[in-house]
Each structure stands twice: as C-alpha cells, then as structure tokens.
View 1 (cartoon, rainbow over the protein chains, first blue to last red):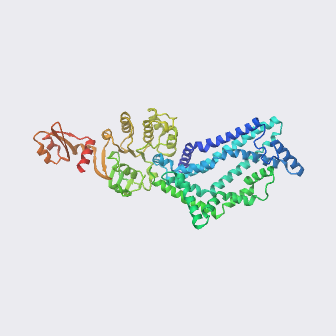
View 2 (spheres, rainbow over the protein chains, first blue to last red; view 1 turned 135 degrees about the horizontal axis):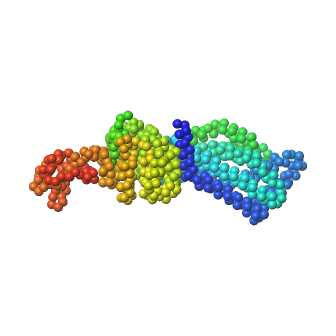
View 3 (tube, rainbow over the protein chains, first blue to last red; view 1 turned 90 degrees about the vertical axis):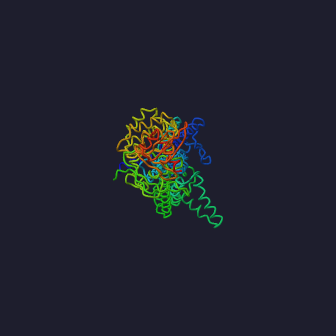
Length: 327
Length: 285
C-alpha cells in the first residue's frame, strides 16, 4: 500500500513537471546559458571579467583583486586560502544566482494556475476519473511548485557555477595565472548549500502566501491573479484609510523577511568596508553555522507557526473546493 | 454486495432555484448496458455527475456499495468515465498519458492500451493538443477499455465525430470490452446508433426519470399500427399515445396494448427507440 502511494505521488509530481517543464527547467537553463554567454563575451570581447569595477574602481579585474587580497593576507599573517576561497566562491555564487531570477515568479504563477487551469480546460474531469484523492492532487501540486521547482533551479545554478569556474579557469590559464585559486570546491558547495537552505527557509516563512494562492486557484471563477492580489491589497488600504494602521501590510512584509531578519540580527555585526570583505560577508551570510542556526531559530518564532497554520487552513479550503469542482 | 452496481433513491439536486434532479430513483444491475436518454438540460449529466461523485446531491446513493460523495477515490478504482467534453490533458504526449494512468491506476493494463492504439492512427509521440478530435476520443477509449473496471460511464462519448468513427467506437466497446461482469451507462443524442447495444433504457426529463424499461420489453410494450380504413374508431378506442397521418392512412402508437388486438386492425410493427422516446415525451407533455 505504501509503495503504491509513493508511486502515485511520484506519478503526480512527474505530471506537474511535464506540465511546467518550461518554468521549472527551461527558464533557469536559459538564464544559466545567458550568464555563461555574458562571461564569454566579457572575456573575449572586453578582455576583462564581468565583475570588474564593482568596488568603486578599486580593482579593475579579478587578477588584481586576488593579488591584492593575497598581499593583504600575507601582511596580516592570516590564512590566505580561506579568504580567497570565500571571495571566489561568493563571486561564482553571485553570477550563477542569475539562474534563480525567475524562480519566485515560476512558483507564484504555477501555484496560482495549479487548480485553475485544470478547471478551465476541463482536464479536471480526467484527473477525477482516476483513483486519486483531492488531497493527493493538491499536495502533489504544492510540492511540485515549491520543492521540485526550487531543487531544479538550484541544480541548474550548481551546474552554471561550475561552468563559470571552467570558463574563468581557461581565461586564467591563458593569462598564466594560478588556476588552483579558482577552484575552492568546498566553499562553492557550502555557499550553494547555504543558499539552498536559506531559500527553503524563506519558502517556509511564506507558506501562508503559497496556501492562499492554491485556495484562490481552486476557487476563482476567472482571473485568479486579481482574486489573489486584490483582497490583501484592499484590506491593507482600507485599514490605512479608516484605521490609520498598517498591520496588514506589515504582517505580509514580515513573511517575506522572516528568515532574513533573523540572520541579519545575528550575522551583521561588522559592516563590510570593501569588496573583498563584502564577498566574505556574502558567504558568511548564507553558509556560516551562525546563519544556519539563525534560520533554525527563526522557526521557534510563534509567528512562523501562525503562518503555517494559516497555510494548512488555506490548503484544506483548496481541497474542499476541489472536491466540489466538476468543470 | 448486491448485484446492483448503482442504487439511487430520491436523488435531488438544485442549482439555485433550478432543480436539476427531482426525486430521481433508479438501479443499474450488473452486466447491463443502460442508455440514459433525454433532451439537452434534462439532467443527464447531473445524474451521471452524482453517480461519479463529481457533484453533491441529496438522497440515497450507492455505487458498488459505496457512497460516491464520500468515497470517490475508492470507487474510481472500479469505475471509468468519459465526460461529454475532451478532458485528456493537452500538455501531455500520448505515451506520457499512458505513463500517468499506469502510475496511478492499479487496474490499468498498459499492453492492452498499446494494442488498441496500434490499430489506430494515434501517434504515441505526439502531444494530445495536436491530435484530432477523433484520435483524442480513440485514445480516451483505449485508456478506459484497458482498465479492468466494473462500471463504465460514457457521457456523449462520440459527440462531434463522424459516422464511421461512431460505429467503430460502439462496436469495439461491445466486442472488445463488454462482458457479463461489466456494466456500461451511456448517454447520447444519436439514439439510433446505440439502440442495438443497449439492454436497458431510462428517459429523463426536467430532472425526473419519466420512463424506464429493458429493451426486450420495449419492443412488446410499444407498437405502431397502420390502421386499415374503417378501423379508425376501434383503433382510437384502445387509447393510442401518439398519432400521425401519412399517405391517407393513420398511424397510431400504443403503449402496453396487446399486439393481438392491434393485429386485427391493420399492419403492426415494433417501434424504434427514437420513436418511443418521442412518443413518450409527447404523450406525457
């Protein structure tokens, strides 16, 4: 029975992938490909790397930056490798992060359409002719849009990150620079993994939003986007106009920054003063144990569980609406 | 469990002030092919939706011994249906749709479906969106015929298809699928095409079941009489439910009148299902 259930769920999630292949995979792959093209153009066309001049012209390009960092580290007697690793890995991360640019939109719109499109094109009658409960349907769509889409986009980011490293290594080889500095594999993986954890933390803090989108998707007679966006906006405006408060907007905003805020409270001790330090800080922010601990602690906040309970209620509503839907 | 696949007593369903089902009661025994005949908006689809657990309704309803309003998922292991609109997921390729059903349905036989499809022009590697209407129906039929179900519900399955295809649809249903263990419920406007495969028939009007019969009895119960000149008075005295005149002769339709009595007054013949439907509907209107 368990095996059948697992197989069913896998089949349902696979269906979602087939339906949303463009958003889940093709779009991040194109963004990753574009980033690689930018890197190549920057190297061949301009002869310099794309992240030159990021720091008010302190450094013109990567070799200068690495050299300066190495000298500074030597002078201060600190471990050169760790600092340079962080800088290089953070740069790779920032560049390859481009692959994630569409992810929030993909999640938003795939959830919003998940229970609406099947009613619009009547395929719900086919899904309902199968021995699959409405709970399984709703949860498989929820899972696919949140977890599957995220994991695939991060998979593409991972590949892009290493592809960028390869391109830059070729460039460095041509310039006769030491390639070993360009392969901080441990730092690359840990920064990528830290970002993934951070992403899931944010997704979890936003659970009420995702649940709300599914509820609207299950119920909206048409234009689900309007039905999703209008109620909270109107509620916020009414509150502002008549009660001169902004609780609604503040509460919604708190969902978006739930995890980040906790990290910021813990990690932001010293403002980064230059580019290299900023890069180290980026890595700190997403992959240090302090950050991971802060994320874990954020889930102890009762506000998080209020949101989770709301999401559960919204999903329950979506299931009940789907039970009654027949076109 | 009784041998009745569907047992419904006093089903009611309203949409606002419109009552789509009025106290509908019917049973569908195992091994039958039941036709549900009615005009547009008579409540056929509402009735089938109730049986399939697709919409709520009031009243006693058991499908395979379970309540479709509570146990749709369980019931769907033994029930297949084709709705009156194209419902197959357009974004899938044909083989992906088969993968899906194979992964979901414990009683689906993929080899069987592929065998059916190999006899058609349906390409495995095309998206369902690109298939013609006929091909989409063939695919859907191949899927439902490959599920070892106890009840198959077809709501206008051949709507908008050409006549050759419609004939083939019903003949493969009868030859390759139907047996004593299976039960089929079918609605259609093309009454003549399903007449010969039905074992039972229900007429539905304004949400009410106004007539039900098995097809063998139907031939006995409804008789058309071409009245010989001079017999008109006697013929009218027997209470025809419909009458018409052609070529100077009256043609009368009788319900539940002895054939022997009618034979004496002229030429008799059994009535086709479509004519019975018209006669009953007009007779009661």
